[in-house]
Image (tube, rainbow, N blue to C red; front, side, top):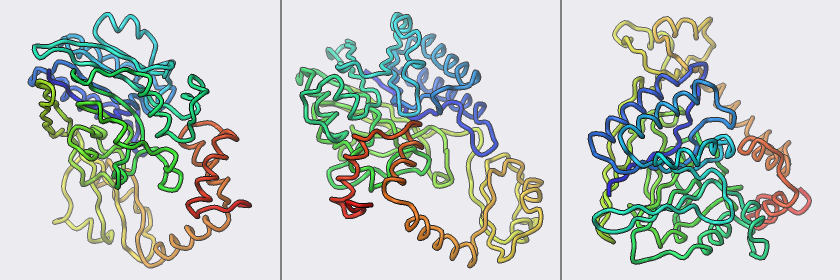
Length: 385
């Protein structure tokens, strides 16, 4: 059976003031062509399908276009929600879609969503775990001791009787870390810092029963511990720190039990994302200017601010996303700002701001208490902070 793994589409996302729907449609068309060329049997979409809980009309139309294309190809589709998705909205029509081979698990209901497919080598069991918080799992399993996301995932998996003689595939949208290393962030994710991430980390040892684990949440493509536990990464570059990345999509061949081959197929964006650095006068020299519609970040190294610099740059590079300065003054200011922020904001305030940014809601007293205990243990907070 041949599978294709996608993660973090973030349909409807913008880059600065630029709407990316055309770019996203371009890359999704490329993926549809790849699925047809490679004769892919099933596509796995590992969460953060939309960029926001209430997607725009254009974003909804684009997902409809993509799903229609997959259905026309006869490709089975497995979809889970991510932390950016509204589980209710993503779940709309799921029973109808299932009749067309599109299987959606947008909300944890006390057990893993399971779908069984067959090929010449026997059964392939697909298990779908949408983004879950520890509190959601405690709701269904109040008897279990759950103080972290890792424990929550352990409890979820323990409720399922896996047939280890058959091939098992898992889709999950969590902050998964290796036994000794954290995943490498791309910079455009809404995930915890290392300080807060202690409660969010899920260990790869949870997934030993699976022949392939399709992860979403981290935007940089990478494997964790073994080749078959991996983040596909986002199909487009969504932050400056990704400008040197090569985006790809994993195509997975499941042979007989124990035979798995992963091929990373590069993706070609409609517009690339690039970073230009230098003095304004240098960047605008005739020999340095090129005609392009790529998205551009500009960092000026001039010691003094240049009048109307953004408008001047956009005359040469119309898709300039952002302009900033890096010089002796901004570097010293950046260090001072970071120190000031750490001094004037309490640990609880930082927790509350982070939680509001990631989840769009206030942190509960219970979750705040758990994070505070971990902060104290890690030495980044004290009992009276």
